[in-house]
Amino acid sequence: MNAPAAVEMTPRERWLATLEGRPVDRLATDYWGTPEITAKIEAETGLAGDALWDHLGVDRLRALGPRSRISHHPDDPQANIWGIRHRRVDYGTGTYDEAVHHPLARVESVRDLDDFRWPRPEDMDVDGIREALASDDGTRLVRAGHYEPFLLYCGMRGMEQAYVDLIESPDLAEAILDRIFRFHFEVNRRIFEAGEGRIDLFYLAEDLGGQHGPLFSLDTYRRFLRPGQKRMAELAHSFGVRVFYHTDGAARPFLPDLIEEVGIDILNPLQWRCPGMDLPELVRDFAAHIAFHGGIDNQHTLPFATEAEVRAQVRWCADIMARHRARWICAPCHNIQSVTPVANVLAMYDEAGCCGLRDA
Image (tube, rainbow, N blue to C red; front, top):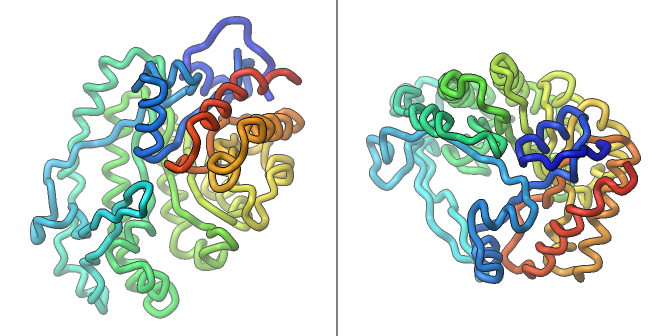
């Protein structure tokens, strides 16, 4: 863990110092939560936006993205630009959007892909990013650009068919993934150019692990996903942008590839309750190579534990990180859910504000 810095830092300074292993004034933090829990916190504190993050001591980053010049797919006004239709699903304490129409569900050959009207990079306007950065005060870290191809593939083919394709129709899978890659590569290139050196993080993602084990074999990952991830990470690095990598679940088998081949800089979200994701072992084995983001359990501890237990887990994570001189952004293991008591969220950030550097 970084040694204390003498001067109070801005959130961006705190993030960058942490990632570079330099002294920080306090533990760096971040927030991930559903809209419902965010609304609950706002209601109980009477604060919102930067005022809320400052009150909690959250080093919230600023996320920027391009604007789409088209509002829907040209052949389907009910679908997004990829031809996917979504339905809002209410699960009792919140909602989420579920894909209900998959535009490539009936495609049988690579040749059939030519009949689909694919999004074009020129449909995405990056001028808004340039304008936002021109007036940015530099207080918060800036994240821009993203790439999560298989999630999009599942939306276009249907999730079950998408996994079947990897075994039964590998040529079709590669052709679809290649089109997804080429679109995002060009859009991200334009985003990084518009950033003119002001973009700090790039969001690279694919859920490689589930709750109980990997979602892909290593060979499948290396054939279908790793090449695109590697090229996208190289693009980000060529503009001086760090790669923030997100994967849920039991993803331990993929970490050597992600570090040595893809070249990620930060790993999120550290779901250490999943098999193979033991937090002390992860930090011991990989702290020299990557920074960590996450770690505070949002499946059991945050929603169902006491405030004291939440504080104890923050201290436990911080002590593990300190023991291995790890670079760590304290944050939940994923989006905090709406069933979580607001008091537990407040306890997490309050404890993070005072515990991270005590043993530095």
